[in-house]
Image 1 (tube, rainbow, N blue to C red):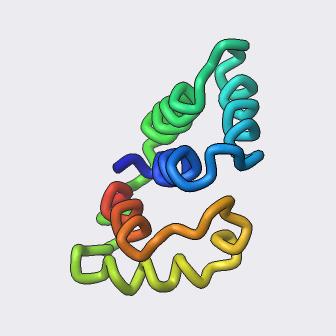
Image 2: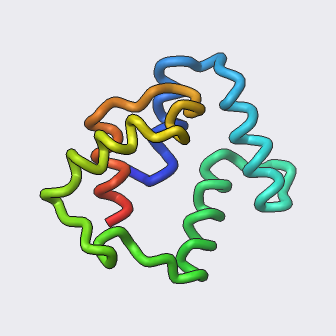
Length: 101
């Protein structure tokens, strides 16, 4: 599972009319400078920028498989998650953290 993709997948599955879907598309167009850019193009742009900037993976900071549940639980309570278009399940949050390792 991609780091940013769970929101996109869950919006498509659970809330296909949610206004965040268009906002993600608009952001992708702004980031890529292409009027036809898709949400996935925006996700790829962010992934490429992260690689170019050499952002360290969570594993570089000592996060291990044993930490996944605790990190996911804390992420679920974080203020940034309160503004998430849809609440992600514990399983989805664990997958996001694992992908960032």
